[in-house]
Length: 113
Length: 113
Image (cartoon, rainbow over all chains, first blue to last red; front, side, top):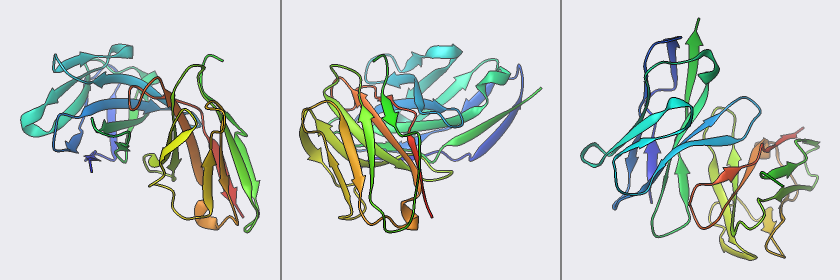
């Protein structure tokens, strides 16, 4: 079965600084990859997804992620962080042959003024 | 409705009581998923429906957990004889097909006393 590792439990960045959240996955074939964001007391909102094609995908709120097959990674980036980006971020991997989606444990982002 | 709706938002129950959590998916969405999210963790897959058929229930932690979607729209997750370890946020998600981007509800926070 597929699995996801988010190595960073908590990251703090200054407002306006760049951001990169790491995600590594384990799956034997090309996976479906997702990044979700969760604010306190809320459900998960999809930021972006990768199914196939261009390995650099653009999402909402200025986020992007790059699928690197050789590194089994799907890191999330944003060039300039806003205070409203403070939240919990989850990477997820879906298998192409079933309906099971696995989430990482999440990275909590704190934004300093 | 415009999004996935879950009710109640909060549920407090005494150990041993039965609880029922409701999910109203986005109209027309074939796939419906239930997840359990413990504090500080990512969502863990519980079960999956395609229309009214429960195709995967491998994530249900015990036979005290039961889910149904009798008419292929609204779903109910039932937990019998609740235990303290059942305390978590229960998230429902729906999608047009399979793991295609899932739209999440805000969850039901269940507390077992």
